[in-house]
Length: 447
Image (cartoon, rainbow, N blue to C red; front, side, top):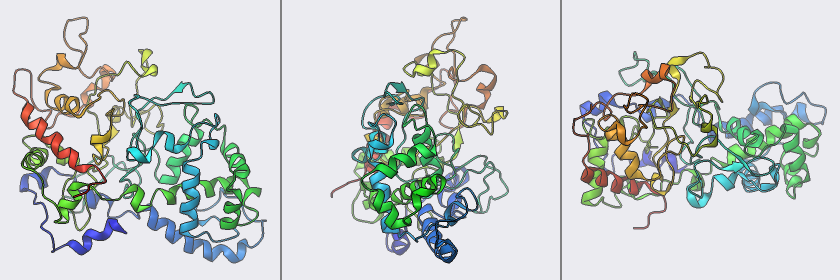
């Protein structure tokens, strides 16, 4: 797979060097995922597991799909990786799987937009009548192939493994799905997305689809006799499709060409990378890893969780209720940490690959340009009135998208370590440099 190609490049191309201070500050992307079996590999291993079950699964009278490992479902036939991927692609682009008949996975995760949103809407519309707004901005599905299952306590094994770096991993903004197949359930069953009542409703649509016989050919003639098992087949197909390297982790940006020694950054792009990496300036690389680590090309995220204090976005309909707060790790959509106030306001760090193609940013889509994002990073606390409305006391109500009781969770490390009256960590010219560098992370670069 192309994700491993940098293994062969080791020693052939020069790695971008990290300073000792960066090593102290960084959270290693590769080490964070080293112990994790990438979903595509897990899927291939699971195929072998199914082969072992084939003898006892030769008849339709098999045990319910709810028992045992997800990958150990005793289907009648052993599906191949190509067949799973082909079925997953058909599911991904099928608007008929939604209650409205008008919303496919690809409607919000458009391949022409790096599998992110195709428009500038803060939240997308869905539901049975396509009029129900979502609650969060749609993230890209690219470069998630190495996201580990959620862990509350991440320890690196690079010489500093005694330090608990806190929550990391999982899919969705709050990390509540441990795998791609678990994540696939969310839009299929969400009332403000594809709005299926339950798994059986999804299976009923697949059973009627033009490709239903392809599912039977892949999994067995009696697949649709058991809704739970058939639903798992649907999720598995979607999972395998989302591991297609050319689609979901092509590593085809200019920056990848630079890492391969096939291109060079311009002077402005190189300065931008310098400010991006410098812990005294942008300090972006402390979370958005930018260097090759033990042979792996960077995903530009450590997939950890931070509370950044992004201003409340009045364009989200749910925010019209002053008592409503989207608190990420501690709810309301993730429910296992509802009583963990120290996690409130934390959202998973997204990959910055293809970030220049986006039109809304952060979990609440508050900003609409990279310039706004970077200006917020460096002036959040030096010019708070620029970002937050004034409260009754006439002062900016900092971090107003969080209840007052948990505003202490907001990140205060660089570049957020400046106070009112101090110069921001990046000048306007340096911000333009960083934006030029971020443009090199867009896939599809042609030298």
